[in-house]
Length: 214
Image (tube, rainbow, N blue to C red):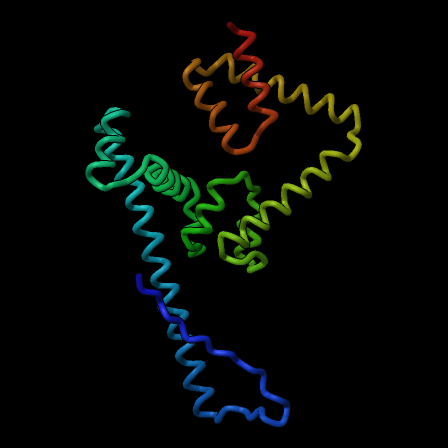
């Protein structure tokens, strides 16, 4: 059994007297190459993002023509694709269709995945536009986590009883209006979308009202 040989290169920090600034020509050339390579990487990332979104849209089309079991078998045989991978492709396509501004922001695929898999407030997108949040999956996850922490602190603050009563009544009236005018199937879909959007209070109110109606 052969072993891969790796040459170990030890980099020693030069002493202060050994440091010498690069020549202007070398510095300019290096900076130019860095700019060119950054642009190439960004273009490559944009291509990956666009192809992933298109795959998701096409998978949605395939799913329309195939039953659930047939769809899973088809993508496995045809593309060697797992259900989880297909689901992520379709979700990112749906997410960008619902939030087209995320395409204009030129977010990489990892950042789109981070956004679609978490409940976030619109302020996050504004922070990204203003370059307050790094355009990376890790950067966006950290920003969303910080936002949730801030929301938890606000939730723990004392609430004015009169304002809370008015708020609860408004939620009750809104749900009653929805129950009166929307068919049961549409209400079920609305409840599902509210849960996905992180509107937990409205989700719970809709579920409670639906349960009481049966």
